[in-house]
Image (tube, rainbow, N blue to C red):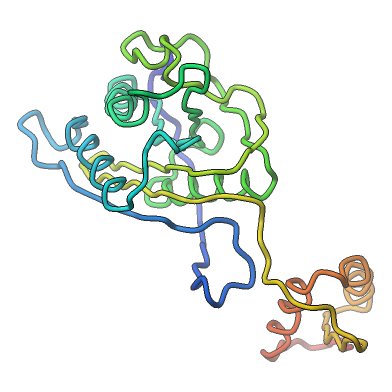
Length: 257
């Protein structure tokens, strides 16, 4: 995205995302509005050359199918590899969909997690989703590291179509787009609807609750009980403890309450 961008550093990652039905969720950070992918790997220049046309097509299709106006998207977590040609292709294709007709006083906020954790290969897209979920949960979009002088090959960065989040920015809710592209032509875009972290609403129990809890040491149990006493008003947390206690936890010495 910036003039001095010369590639990325690799990283390692392991990601688990738990997806629940809207009718059964116990806690919700965001809702999936739509997900779509396409492939542009067969290119005359070679599989590793980016293809802006196919990315633009992907955006058009995913938002049309979802019935969502791209101008209502407030933030996009970009692929953002740090490779100038790839970043230019990504953002210039985004400008066609997300910036035309957008209020210049409210540019599209963008960022990327790779400057913080590196390129985590197969889970890089999931790392981007995790960043967005944390931003929603904490009501704060973390600042993008290492951004300096905008790349002049990306007009949207210099004409206020895009705004790179360079300072921790309050999260105001709304729709989020997440990009994930592979070097061999796989393109994926996800639309998420964010908001304050939402837990399953339950009425307070009129009677005392029995909360099972186990630990391998007395200290662990004491710490756990202290933590539980601080959040007894959180039905989601109590529900998780009950779920955990459904399974046997084996150990040489166990302290159970």
